[in-house]
Amino acid sequence: MKGVSAAVILAGFAFGPAGCSHSGPADGASSGGGGSGDVSTVRLTAEPVPPIKQGDAHSVKVTVERGKDYRGPIRLEVKGEEKLLANVDRPVLKDGDPTDVNVRIRPADDAPEGEHKVTLTATPGDGPSTTLELKVKVVKK
Image (cartoon, rainbow, N blue to C red; front, side, top):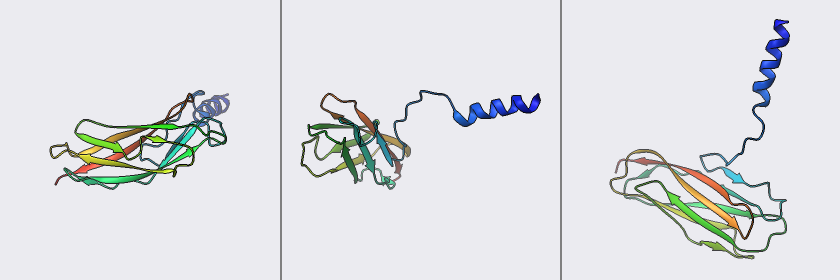
């Protein structure tokens, strides 16, 4: 009987809770709605962000993949934590635009050292928005 109970408990850990949502890895690897086959979903992928010195800036390339048949505009919004300025070079992507955008990240001169986050949100027309969190390590100037 003890062996059966242990197997049931271990199975619960292996399968985990149902219905969890996934917003993508915090290191900026990838994030997406239901995949590139869905009509109005967007998938975001990014290169890793190297450490950035206080007061310096770094641009990160982010690739925006559209859903299979989606041809409408995609709005991009970026937000950094306090003392971490961030902007995207093209806030709206139209059909036929290049799929890569640059997110420029600049920690303030007095930004605290350590790990911080920049969040990029992509919203296709009336479809579900997708977010990508970029981990940013701020180092002393």
